[in-house]
Length: 390
Image (cartoon, rainbow, N blue to C red; front, side, top):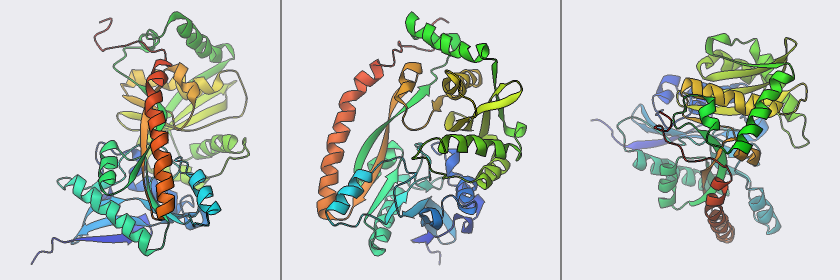
Protein backbone atom coordinates (compact mmCIF):
# COMPACT_ATOMS: atom_id res chain seq x y z
CA UNK A 1 0.00 0.00 0.00
CA UNK A 2 1.38 3.45 -1.00
CA UNK A 3 1.89 5.97 1.80
CA UNK A 4 0.74 9.41 0.65
CA UNK A 5 1.18 11.08 4.04
CA UNK A 6 3.55 14.04 4.28
CA UNK A 7 6.39 13.89 6.79
CA UNK A 8 8.33 16.90 8.02
CA UNK A 9 12.04 16.29 8.49
CA UNK A 10 14.51 18.83 9.90
CA UNK A 11 17.93 18.58 8.25
CA UNK A 12 21.10 19.87 9.94
CA UNK A 13 23.21 20.07 6.77
CA UNK A 14 21.95 20.69 3.27
CA UNK A 15 24.63 18.35 1.93
CA UNK A 16 22.56 15.46 3.33
CA UNK A 17 19.92 16.18 0.67
CA UNK A 18 20.85 15.07 -2.86
CA UNK A 19 21.53 18.06 -5.10
CA UNK A 20 19.24 16.75 -7.84
CA UNK A 21 16.32 16.34 -5.41
CA UNK A 22 16.74 19.88 -4.04
CA UNK A 23 17.21 21.61 -7.40
CA UNK A 24 14.20 19.76 -8.86
CA UNK A 25 12.08 21.99 -6.60
CA UNK A 26 13.32 25.26 -8.14
CA UNK A 27 11.04 27.28 -10.41
CA UNK A 28 11.18 30.59 -12.29
CA UNK A 29 10.62 32.61 -9.09
CA UNK A 30 13.77 31.16 -7.52
CA UNK A 31 17.13 32.88 -7.62
CA UNK A 32 20.60 31.32 -8.06
CA UNK A 33 21.05 31.82 -4.32
CA UNK A 34 18.55 29.01 -3.69
CA UNK A 35 20.47 26.42 -5.65
CA UNK A 36 21.87 23.52 -3.67
CA UNK A 37 25.46 24.39 -4.58
CA UNK A 38 25.16 27.95 -3.30
CA UNK A 39 23.61 26.97 0.02
CA UNK A 40 25.89 23.97 0.43
CA UNK A 41 28.90 26.18 -0.26
CA UNK A 42 27.79 28.51 2.54
CA UNK A 43 27.94 25.61 4.96
CA UNK A 44 30.99 23.72 3.68
CA UNK A 45 33.13 26.86 3.51
CA UNK A 46 32.39 28.10 7.03
CA UNK A 47 29.96 30.97 6.28
CA UNK A 48 26.51 29.84 7.45
CA UNK A 49 27.56 27.51 10.26
CA UNK A 50 27.18 27.25 14.02
CA UNK A 51 30.47 29.10 14.65
CA UNK A 52 29.04 32.18 12.88
CA UNK A 53 25.64 31.99 14.54
CA UNK A 54 23.85 30.16 11.70
CA UNK A 55 22.70 26.72 12.85
CA UNK A 56 21.18 24.89 9.84
CA UNK A 57 17.67 23.60 10.56
CA UNK A 58 16.40 23.08 7.01
CA UNK A 59 12.73 22.18 6.76
CA UNK A 60 11.79 19.44 4.31
CA UNK A 61 8.52 17.72 3.44
CA UNK A 62 8.62 14.15 2.14
CA UNK A 63 6.02 11.89 0.62
CA UNK A 64 7.54 8.49 1.07
CA UNK A 65 11.08 8.81 -0.33
CA UNK A 66 10.20 11.80 -2.52
CA UNK A 67 11.16 15.34 -1.48
CA UNK A 68 8.13 17.52 -2.28
CA UNK A 69 8.94 20.80 -0.50
CA UNK A 70 11.82 22.42 1.35
CA UNK A 71 12.93 25.69 2.91
CA UNK A 72 16.45 26.72 3.93
CA UNK A 73 16.19 27.55 7.62
CA UNK A 74 18.56 28.40 10.46
CA UNK A 75 18.48 28.83 14.21
CA UNK A 76 20.02 32.24 14.84
CA UNK A 77 21.99 33.56 17.80
CA UNK A 78 21.83 37.16 16.56
CA UNK A 79 20.48 39.16 13.58
CA UNK A 80 23.71 39.88 11.71
CA UNK A 81 23.66 39.29 7.96
CA UNK A 82 19.87 39.12 7.63
CA UNK A 83 19.14 42.61 6.17
CA UNK A 84 15.69 42.73 7.78
CA UNK A 85 16.59 44.72 10.83
CA UNK A 86 14.96 43.59 14.05
CA UNK A 87 17.64 44.79 16.47
CA UNK A 88 15.15 47.24 17.92
CA UNK A 89 12.77 44.39 18.69
CA UNK A 90 15.57 42.44 20.35
CA UNK A 91 16.60 45.46 22.44
CA UNK A 92 13.01 46.08 23.52
CA UNK A 93 12.66 42.43 24.50
CA UNK A 94 15.89 42.60 26.51
CA UNK A 95 14.71 45.69 28.39
CA UNK A 96 11.46 43.91 29.20
CA UNK A 97 13.25 40.79 30.41
CA UNK A 98 12.05 38.75 27.43
CA UNK A 99 14.45 36.36 25.68
CA UNK A 100 14.68 37.13 21.93
CA UNK A 101 17.51 34.82 20.85
CA UNK A 102 17.73 32.17 19.62
CA UNK A 103 15.13 32.48 16.87
CA UNK A 104 14.33 30.59 13.64
CA UNK A 105 14.90 32.23 10.26
CA UNK A 106 13.84 31.00 6.81
CA UNK A 107 16.24 32.80 4.50
CA UNK A 108 19.26 32.71 2.24
CA UNK A 109 22.13 33.84 4.51
CA UNK A 110 23.63 37.28 3.84
CA UNK A 111 21.41 37.78 0.78
CA UNK A 112 18.75 40.52 0.64
CA UNK A 113 17.15 39.29 -2.59
CA UNK A 114 13.48 38.39 -2.94
CA UNK A 115 12.82 34.83 -4.11
CA UNK A 116 11.05 31.64 -3.14
CA UNK A 117 11.53 30.76 0.50
CA UNK A 118 9.55 27.55 0.15
CA UNK A 119 10.57 25.32 -2.75
CA UNK A 120 7.79 23.07 -4.03
CA UNK A 121 7.90 20.17 -6.50
CA UNK A 122 6.15 20.67 -9.86
CA UNK A 123 2.53 19.56 -9.83
CA UNK A 124 2.14 19.95 -6.07
CA UNK A 125 -0.22 22.40 -4.37
CA UNK A 126 2.16 25.28 -3.71
CA UNK A 127 -0.05 27.16 -1.26
CA UNK A 128 -0.88 24.05 0.77
CA UNK A 129 2.74 22.89 1.03
CA UNK A 130 4.00 26.40 1.78
CA UNK A 131 1.53 26.64 4.62
CA UNK A 132 2.62 23.20 5.85
CA UNK A 133 6.25 24.38 5.89
CA UNK A 134 5.35 27.57 7.76
CA UNK A 135 3.30 25.66 10.30
CA UNK A 136 6.15 23.18 10.64
CA UNK A 137 8.57 26.06 11.27
CA UNK A 138 6.35 27.44 14.03
CA UNK A 139 5.98 23.99 15.60
CA UNK A 140 9.74 23.42 15.47
CA UNK A 141 10.49 26.80 17.00
CA UNK A 142 8.05 26.20 19.83
CA UNK A 143 9.41 22.70 20.45
CA UNK A 144 12.98 24.04 20.63
CA UNK A 145 11.90 26.95 22.83
CA UNK A 146 12.85 29.61 20.30
CA UNK A 147 11.33 33.06 20.56
CA UNK A 148 10.02 33.52 17.04
CA UNK A 149 10.01 32.60 13.35
CA UNK A 150 11.03 34.97 10.55
CA UNK A 151 10.73 34.52 6.78
CA UNK A 152 12.99 37.00 5.01
CA UNK A 153 12.44 38.32 1.45
CA UNK A 154 9.69 35.89 0.38
CA UNK A 155 7.63 36.38 -2.75
CA UNK A 156 4.31 38.24 -2.46
CA UNK A 157 2.25 35.06 -2.76
CA UNK A 158 4.29 33.38 -0.03
CA UNK A 159 3.69 36.36 2.24
CA UNK A 160 -0.05 35.97 1.69
CA UNK A 161 0.13 32.30 2.69
CA UNK A 162 2.20 33.19 5.77
CA UNK A 163 -0.37 35.83 6.76
CA UNK A 164 -3.13 33.24 6.50
CA UNK A 165 -1.06 31.13 8.91
CA UNK A 166 -0.93 33.94 11.46
CA UNK A 167 2.23 35.83 10.50
CA UNK A 168 2.53 39.60 10.56
CA UNK A 169 3.86 41.01 7.29
CA UNK A 170 6.53 43.68 7.36
CA UNK A 171 7.26 45.86 4.33
CA UNK A 172 10.62 47.22 3.27
CA UNK A 173 11.97 49.10 0.26
CA UNK A 174 14.86 48.40 -2.10
CA UNK A 175 15.84 50.17 -5.31
CA UNK A 176 15.81 48.14 -8.53
CA UNK A 177 16.55 49.01 -12.14
CA UNK A 178 13.91 47.72 -14.54
CA UNK A 179 14.31 47.24 -18.27
CA UNK A 180 11.06 47.86 -20.17
CA UNK A 181 12.81 47.01 -23.45
CA UNK A 182 15.49 49.65 -24.04
CA UNK A 183 17.31 49.38 -27.35
CA UNK A 184 20.40 51.12 -26.01
CA UNK A 185 21.77 53.19 -23.12
CA UNK A 186 20.77 56.48 -24.73
CA UNK A 187 17.15 55.34 -24.78
CA UNK A 188 17.41 54.76 -21.04
CA UNK A 189 18.85 58.26 -20.56
CA UNK A 190 16.01 59.73 -22.62
CA UNK A 191 13.65 59.10 -19.71
CA UNK A 192 15.38 61.84 -17.68
CA UNK A 193 15.23 65.59 -18.08
CA UNK A 194 18.26 67.29 -19.66
CA UNK A 195 19.84 68.26 -16.34
CA UNK A 196 19.75 64.68 -15.03
CA UNK A 197 20.91 63.25 -18.37
CA UNK A 198 23.93 65.54 -18.34
CA UNK A 199 24.71 64.54 -14.76
CA UNK A 200 24.66 60.83 -15.60
CA UNK A 201 26.71 61.33 -18.78
CA UNK A 202 29.28 63.38 -16.87
CA UNK A 203 29.62 60.76 -14.14
CA UNK A 204 29.87 57.93 -16.69
CA UNK A 205 32.59 59.79 -18.64
CA UNK A 206 34.71 60.18 -15.51
CA UNK A 207 36.15 56.67 -15.75
CA UNK A 208 37.62 57.26 -19.22
CA UNK A 209 39.01 60.64 -18.19
CA UNK A 210 40.69 58.95 -15.22
CA UNK A 211 42.31 56.36 -17.50
CA UNK A 212 40.05 53.61 -16.17
CA UNK A 213 38.60 50.87 -18.37
CA UNK A 214 35.63 48.73 -17.39
CA UNK A 215 34.81 45.20 -18.50
CA UNK A 216 32.79 42.20 -17.37
CA UNK A 217 33.97 38.61 -17.35
CA UNK A 218 31.48 35.83 -16.83
CA UNK A 219 30.95 32.09 -17.14
CA UNK A 220 33.83 30.29 -18.83
CA UNK A 221 35.95 33.46 -18.70
CA UNK A 222 36.20 33.02 -14.93
CA UNK A 223 38.41 30.55 -13.10
CA UNK A 224 39.18 29.62 -9.52
CA UNK A 225 42.15 31.97 -9.75
CA UNK A 226 39.67 34.88 -9.77
CA UNK A 227 38.44 33.86 -6.32
CA UNK A 228 41.41 35.52 -4.64
CA UNK A 229 40.67 38.81 -6.43
CA UNK A 230 36.97 38.58 -5.60
CA UNK A 231 37.80 37.97 -1.94
CA UNK A 232 40.26 40.90 -1.85
CA UNK A 233 37.60 43.19 -3.31
CA UNK A 234 35.08 41.94 -0.76
CA UNK A 235 37.50 42.52 2.13
CA UNK A 236 38.41 46.00 0.91
CA UNK A 237 34.84 47.08 1.63
CA UNK A 238 34.22 44.99 4.74
CA UNK A 239 37.37 46.27 6.46
CA UNK A 240 36.72 49.90 5.56
CA UNK A 241 33.88 50.27 8.05
CA UNK A 242 33.80 49.68 11.79
CA UNK A 243 30.55 47.74 11.42
CA UNK A 244 31.85 45.59 8.56
CA UNK A 245 31.83 41.83 9.11
CA UNK A 246 33.54 39.02 7.23
CA UNK A 247 30.52 36.90 6.47
CA UNK A 248 32.14 35.08 3.54
CA UNK A 249 35.40 33.15 3.20
CA UNK A 250 37.82 32.90 0.31
CA UNK A 251 36.89 29.23 0.11
CA UNK A 252 33.30 30.19 -0.60
CA UNK A 253 34.34 32.40 -3.52
CA UNK A 254 36.49 29.55 -4.87
CA UNK A 255 33.63 27.11 -4.59
CA UNK A 256 30.95 29.19 -6.30
CA UNK A 257 33.30 30.29 -9.08
CA UNK A 258 34.04 26.62 -9.69
CA UNK A 259 30.54 25.20 -9.20
CA UNK A 260 28.26 27.98 -10.46
CA UNK A 261 30.21 29.84 -13.17
CA UNK A 262 27.07 30.30 -15.26
CA UNK A 263 25.71 32.60 -12.54
CA UNK A 264 28.81 34.63 -11.67
CA UNK A 265 30.04 37.91 -13.13
CA UNK A 266 33.15 39.89 -12.27
CA UNK A 267 33.16 43.56 -13.24
CA UNK A 268 36.73 44.86 -13.37
CA UNK A 269 37.96 48.44 -13.36
CA UNK A 270 41.56 48.63 -14.57
CA UNK A 271 44.02 51.51 -14.57
CA UNK A 272 47.44 51.03 -16.10
CA UNK A 273 46.61 47.37 -16.63
CA UNK A 274 45.99 46.74 -12.92
CA UNK A 275 42.63 46.04 -11.29
CA UNK A 276 41.79 48.94 -9.00
CA UNK A 277 38.14 48.11 -8.31
CA UNK A 278 35.50 45.56 -9.11
CA UNK A 279 32.11 44.08 -8.36
CA UNK A 280 30.96 40.50 -7.96
CA UNK A 281 27.47 40.03 -9.42
CA UNK A 282 25.17 37.02 -9.59
CA UNK A 283 23.03 36.52 -12.69
CA UNK A 284 20.05 34.51 -13.88
CA UNK A 285 18.50 34.61 -17.34
CA UNK A 286 16.26 37.52 -16.36
CA UNK A 287 17.90 39.16 -13.33
CA UNK A 288 21.24 40.60 -12.29
CA UNK A 289 22.04 40.84 -8.59
CA UNK A 290 24.77 43.21 -7.46
CA UNK A 291 26.34 41.55 -4.45
CA UNK A 292 29.84 42.72 -3.46
CA UNK A 293 32.08 45.55 -4.55
CA UNK A 294 35.48 46.83 -3.53
CA UNK A 295 38.25 49.21 -4.58
CA UNK A 296 41.97 49.57 -4.01
CA UNK A 297 42.06 53.18 -5.22
CA UNK A 298 39.60 56.00 -4.70
CA UNK A 299 38.36 58.00 -7.71
CA UNK A 300 35.30 60.23 -8.16
CA UNK A 301 32.24 58.31 -9.40
CA UNK A 302 34.19 55.03 -9.48
CA UNK A 303 31.55 53.23 -7.42
CA UNK A 304 28.72 54.43 -9.67
CA UNK A 305 30.57 53.33 -12.80
CA UNK A 306 31.56 49.90 -11.51
CA UNK A 307 28.32 49.07 -9.74
CA UNK A 308 25.66 50.86 -11.80
CA UNK A 309 26.38 52.45 -15.16
CA UNK A 310 28.53 49.69 -16.64
CA UNK A 311 26.13 46.92 -15.59
CA UNK A 312 23.07 48.88 -16.76
CA UNK A 313 24.66 48.99 -20.22
CA UNK A 314 25.32 45.26 -20.00
CA UNK A 315 21.74 44.55 -18.94
CA UNK A 316 20.39 46.50 -21.92
CA UNK A 317 22.72 44.73 -24.34
CA UNK A 318 21.80 41.29 -22.97
CA UNK A 319 18.08 41.91 -22.48
CA UNK A 320 18.18 41.42 -18.70
CA UNK A 321 14.82 42.36 -17.21
CA UNK A 322 15.81 43.57 -13.73
CA UNK A 323 19.00 44.66 -11.96
CA UNK A 324 18.83 44.49 -8.17
CA UNK A 325 21.66 46.44 -6.62
CA UNK A 326 21.22 45.09 -3.09
CA UNK A 327 19.89 46.62 0.11
CA UNK A 328 19.86 50.33 0.87
CA UNK A 329 21.34 53.08 -1.22
CA UNK A 330 18.95 55.97 -1.76
CA UNK A 331 21.62 57.45 -4.06
CA UNK A 332 20.40 54.88 -6.59
CA UNK A 333 17.14 56.81 -7.04
CA UNK A 334 18.69 59.58 -9.14
CA UNK A 335 20.45 56.98 -11.29
CA UNK A 336 17.44 55.15 -12.63
CA UNK A 337 16.68 52.70 -9.82
CA UNK A 338 13.06 52.65 -8.72
CA UNK A 339 11.61 51.81 -5.29
CA UNK A 340 10.41 48.22 -4.96
CA UNK A 341 8.55 46.78 -1.98
CA UNK A 342 10.10 43.84 -0.15
CA UNK A 343 8.44 41.69 2.48
CA UNK A 344 9.19 39.65 5.55
CA UNK A 345 6.91 37.48 7.72
CA UNK A 346 7.08 37.15 11.50
CA UNK A 347 5.60 35.01 14.26
CA UNK A 348 6.54 36.26 17.75
CA UNK A 349 5.49 33.92 20.54
CA UNK A 350 5.55 36.18 23.61
CA UNK A 351 2.07 37.82 23.66
CA UNK A 352 3.21 41.21 24.90
CA UNK A 353 6.14 41.44 22.51
CA UNK A 354 3.97 40.19 19.66
CA UNK A 355 1.46 42.98 20.25
CA UNK A 356 4.16 45.65 20.43
CA UNK A 357 5.85 44.40 17.25
CA UNK A 358 2.55 44.18 15.37
CA UNK A 359 1.77 47.79 16.27
CA UNK A 360 5.22 48.89 15.13
CA UNK A 361 4.99 46.94 11.86
CA UNK A 362 1.56 48.40 11.16
CA UNK A 363 2.83 51.97 11.56
CA UNK A 364 5.99 51.27 9.57
CA UNK A 365 4.16 49.64 6.68
CA UNK A 366 1.59 52.44 6.52
CA UNK A 367 4.40 55.00 6.36
CA UNK A 368 6.12 53.10 3.53
CA UNK A 369 2.92 52.80 1.50
CA UNK A 370 2.21 56.52 1.98
CA UNK A 371 5.75 57.46 0.91
CA UNK A 372 5.93 55.28 -2.22
CA UNK A 373 4.35 57.81 -4.65
CA UNK A 374 6.85 60.53 -3.70
CA UNK A 375 9.71 58.01 -3.78
CA UNK A 376 8.75 57.02 -7.31
CA UNK A 377 8.46 60.65 -8.37
CA UNK A 378 11.96 61.34 -7.01
CA UNK A 379 13.48 59.06 -9.66
CA UNK A 380 12.69 61.65 -12.31
CA UNK A 381 11.91 58.88 -14.80
CA UNK A 382 9.40 59.74 -17.48
CA UNK A 383 6.85 57.17 -18.60
CA UNK A 384 8.16 54.74 -21.20
CA UNK A 385 6.68 51.98 -23.31
CA UNK A 386 8.40 49.60 -25.69
CA UNK A 387 6.66 51.36 -28.62
CA UNK A 388 8.31 54.71 -27.86
CA UNK A 389 10.67 55.97 -30.58
CA UNK A 390 10.09 52.84 -32.69
